[in-house]
Length: 157
Ligand code: S3P
Image (cartoon, rainbow, N blue to C red):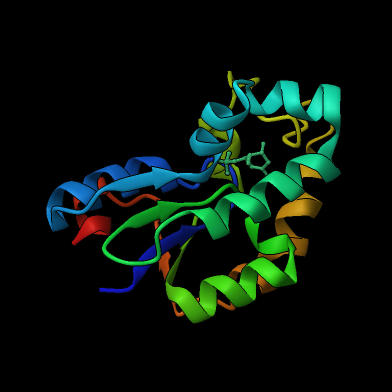
């Protein structure tokens, strides 16, 4: 079976859904951020701070190509789809499921989270713009699931 790629904005629930979907389908789950952090022995936030976003995006592109493309669920960082090369890879190698979540729910969910350098809690309008700018890129997915106000089990089913 071709890989299942879960895409979506920060806080949309990719990791949670990926983990449960993996259990339901008996498939391993790999998260691209975890993979990068292990490989580089550095947190994503530190990579952004010391090496910059451009370098992180290079790591992301490389990670995608190193990961298996069969019998696996891959949860991607929220910005994975911002590179056309990545979108083409995802579209051709696997099935992309975009997990959509309303912005206000995401804000509530990530209220106390400081691990995401591009989620600007002080200037939420900037984060909301990023959310809207990326929508068309996420919507290139094969399938979209609206996860807003839904239970994990329902989303997985
Ligand atoms: C990012 C999302 C993060 C992480 C990095 C950049 C983004 O992943 O890759 O902080 O550009 O949206 P999550 O979507 O898992 O939070």
